[in-house]
Structures are given as structure tokens and as C-alpha cells.
Image (tube, rainbow, N blue to C red; front, side, top):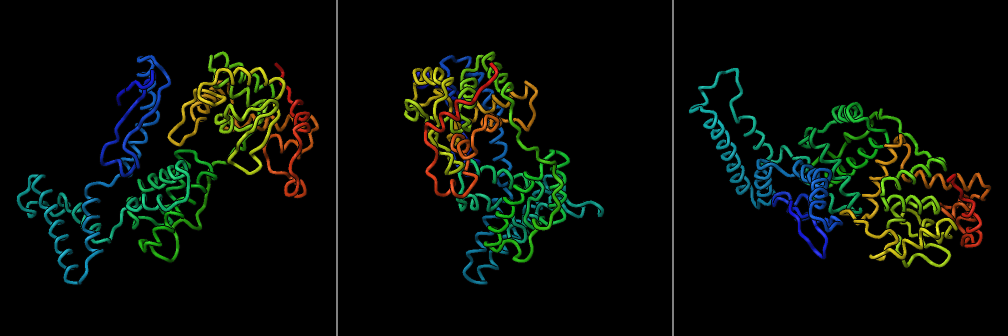
Length: 426
């Protein structure tokens, strides 16, 4: 880790170890620390290393092949390209010689001159390792992670989704290092252990299984696992019950806002303010640009659904905040100065700060930033706003086919009357 100053701001830099570059897919970490003060930059860099970069490197280490596996993969590739049976026999002879040499080196390292010195009831040092190498090199054993990156490259997913799937397979491989280890009974035990030790929900377990099934199907296409049956079918999922997200009360939203202001967290208080008067998702608000703010409405882009991209009238209580944010913007964004994570997500850091804030105030897992969006919907419903109008305000799909399929949407004036019904007990 080292610091570099560019354009008056400090950046944290960390070079990826060469052997991990193919696993991680890039060669260096780099992050703007959003400060001109060197001491503050060092503190932020330390936190960045502790909570993010070091964990990514440790995960990559678990996904990187050991030397024994990489050496065996070399011989396996030679066997796969052998043109004749004579050439294949020659390579198999080289593999056996290498396995024997590994065994004898292990004996010498343990202080034995002859294997006959070893007591009959003891396993000779290096014997199991040499046999494992032999099985790997001849293809009788295949490392679970050997084709992981090949599978990830074939997926048509965003980088964040690919990283999530990669993490799942790496965790699975810790318990099942070789494909030959995988069987339904032990997979069931592995899932049960995840629930016992980590308290995972059934929803998360289902995601794990879906990702592992996808990887297994890919391995099947390479003829590395049997065509018949799957170790990921007919399993019992006894995860914790998923607690549905709950809305904040209007008074709760005010409490959150005041707490953010008391911490002097400008970005956090501003994003809460924007959310409580628009009902927009945090991701949409953090990527909102100055050019998206018109005289009487805001153009919100939402990638979640087609209905998510919409024009939302500016609530009268929101106008002063928006005016200030537009005047202060230095980078073209309404919420100026937010740093994007490696996926280009500008809401990541402020979202985590919101998580800590609501936890400090006593809210549990069922309350998240998205709960403010539910609050807005609840206020509109209680104010008698028709469902199709509320859907146009918050960007939901229309509840009925006539409006949902054929209508071009409510006018700004209709939505303005609806959104002015939003009220909070300040």
C-alpha cells in the first residue's frame, strides 16, 4: 500500500501479487481517498485495506492453485494434446517419475535414507501427497476451482454478479477441493453447516445452489462430471426465515435524517432527504446528474425495471435542498463528491454509512434504505392516492393490464398533486 497525490487529492495504490493477477483479473488497486490531508489519507487507506482490499486478496489466494496443482495441470495438458498412444505412454512415464521424485524428496526432508526405516504402522512422509499429484496429473482428480475463471468468462453477467458467483464457488471449494469429493450427502451437510454457523436464510441457500448448479452444468459440458444425476438436487433447505423488509414510519425517517445531520454527514442527510420526497432508490439518487433536474421535475433513471425510469415532480419541501445541491455540484452529479466502488456504484459507501446509522438507532435487518421507498408508498396510499398514480411516482409496474400495458402514464400535474401529499412530522 502506498499513497500518491494527484490533482490535489491523495490516492491509495496497492499492486496485486503477480500470481494472483490472473485470479483477480486486474493488476492493481487504486482508489481516490477524497482528501488533501495526508494524515487523513493514511487513516482512510488503512480502513480501506482492512475492510476491503485485504479481504479480496485473501479470497483470491483461496482461489489460486497450489504449485502441486499447477504442476499437475501442466502434465494433464500434455496428456490432452498427446497425438499417439506411444506419446501418451511416454508422458505417463514422466508423471510417474515426477511422483516418485516428489516422494523421495519428502523422505529425505524428513531425515529418512530408505523407506524401509519407516515403521509399518506409519504412513511414509510425502506418500499421500505424491499419490495426490499422480491422480491430479493423470486426470483422476480435478481441482474444483480449475475451470472457475473459464466459467465466469462465459457468463453474461455484470462484474458484481460474477464476483458474487465466484465467491460462492470458492467457499464451496474450501470444503470440496476436488470435483470427485462432491456428493449429495456431503453437500447437504455443507448447507446445514452454513445455517448453523452463519445463520443463512433459505433465500441465500437457494442462491448458492443456483450458482453451484450453473457451474456444475458448465463442468458437465466439459465432460468433467457425470452426465447423470446432480449433487445439487433433492436437497432440504432449513435456513433461517427471511424477514421481509419493513417500512419506516414518517417519524422514523425524520429521526434518521436528524441523526445524519447530527453526525455532520452531508451526503447521508442529503440522500435521505432526496429519498423521502421522491421515493427513489439510493442507486438512482447517487447517479442523478445536474442535467436530470428540470424546472419542475426530476428525471430518474432506474435500471431495475422499465417502469423505473420516470419524471418525478419536485416536492415543494425538496426545492431548497435541490437548489443548494445544484449550486454546490463540482462533478455534474446532484450528490457531488461521492466515490464509486470498483463496479462504478456511487451509492456503496453512503449506503454502508446508512446501515450503521440505522443499526445505532435500534433498527434491525428488516429496515434498510429501501424502507424509505416503502414509507413513501405507504404515505401515498393512506392519503388516498390511486394505486396507478402512486406506481408512476415511485416507478413500479402498473397493477392492472389496461394501465400497465396501454397507458402512457399519468401527467406531471396529476403526479404533482399526489406527491404534495407526502408529509413528515418535523
